[in-house]
Image (cartoon, rainbow, N blue to C red; front, top):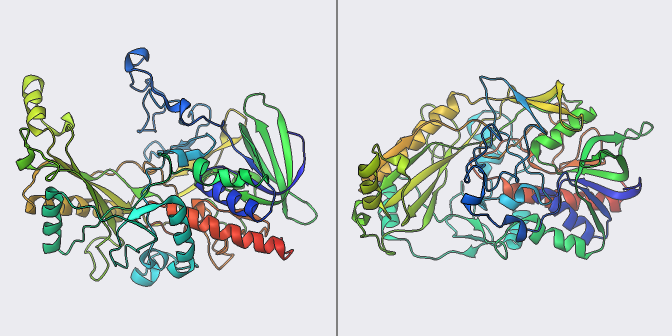
Length: 523
C-alpha cells in the first residue's frame, strides 16, 4: 500500500472499529482500516474436520497456546500464536491474554451477553467511596445503548431493576421450565432476583462487526480495509504535535509501509491499543497510561442435579432454559467483606453431564452418567474486579514480537475483595440450589487467572481531569485532540457485566462526536 492521505485511520476491525467505520462513512467521511489478520470466509473457514483426521485428535498441541484455556485443535488457528506475538508476566502472577487477529477480531467469537452498565458502575465511588467515577452516567449513554441494541437485536425481558437497566429488547416472554421455577421461588425467599438473560440475536447466526457493521460501511464506498498488516507506531507531526498517521508492516512480506491521516482512531482492543500508545510514546502526560487494568472474575461456580429429572425422567417442561441473577449485593445493604458485586449465569440442561462432577471411574462412572443424564443445573459467576493503579501493563524492552515490536509486560493480580466475592457467589448458589431441592455435585471457589474472561478493560481510562486520565468523556485524547481510543481501554470501572454493549455504545457516541468536530474544523 503506497503512502497516501485519508480522512480517518482506524486501527482494528472488531466491534468498536466496525462501529466507527459505520458511523463515519455514513456521514461521508473516508476511512482506511488497518487489521493485523486476514479476511475470513466465515462459513467456509469454520468447517470442522473429524477428530480422527487431526494429529492430536482434537486436543490442543502440547505447549501451544498455554494461556488460552478455550483453545483446542479444532480452533487453534483462531488464536494469536504466543510464540509469534508473546507477552510477559511475573511467574507467580499469570495472566491469560486471549487474542484474535482476524478481520472482525474477537467480535467473531462473542458469547453475545448484552448488558448495560448501571449507575452502580458509572458512579460507583458515590455508592461505596472506592476508586473514581466515570465522567458520564447512564443517561449519557442510554440513547446509544438503545440504538446498538436495535442493530444487534437484543433479546431480553424488562425487569425494572436499577442495577440491571432495561433496554430496547426483542421481548423474551418464553415460559420458565419447572426446575427454573423452583429456583426462582428459592431466590425470592432469599431476596435474590432471577431474571431472563439478555443476548444479542444478531443475524444469520452471527452478531459480529463483519455482518452487522462493516457491510454498511463498505456500502458507502468510503471504507478501504487493509488486512494482514501490523501497526508499529502512531506518527506525529513534529510542528503541530498532532497525530498524522501510522507506520506498519506487512505480516507476510515484512514490507514497511505508512499511511497519513487527519485523524487516528484506535480500536485494536484494550491492551493492543495501549501497547501501541506506549510504543509510540504518546498520550501519557498523566502518567496513568497502562494503569488500572481490570477484567471480570470467571471460574467460580456450582454444578447440581435435579433429582426428579434423573433416570430418563427429564422432560421439556421440567428441564431447560437459562437465567441470570444480576448483582444484588451492596445495593440496599452492605456485604461484610467485599464491595461491588457479581452476577450468576444459570442453566438448566437436558444434555449429558460432565464426568468431572463424579468421584467415580469405569463402570461405576458410566452408571452415574447414564442415571444423571438430562438432570444438570449449573451456575457460573461473573464478578467485578476493582480498578487499582498497581494492576498495569508496561513495555518489556527485552522481548519483541515477530516484527521486532516490543511486547507488553502484564502485572495484575486479584485482591481479597475478588476472592471474598467469589466465595459469597458460590455459597449463595449452593444455598439457592439446596433450597430448590437440587443435589449439589461440585463447587469451585477459585477464580480463573486474570484475563481469562477475555474482557480486558481500562489502561487508557477516560476522565475530566487530564492529570489523572488519558481520554476525555468523548474517548478523545487529552494530549492529542485528533487521536481517539474507542475500545474497552477507556473504561474507568468494569462491573460484573459483559462489556460489549458498552464498548459499542461508547464507540458510536465517540464517532458522532468526532464527525461533528471534523465538520466544525476542530480536528
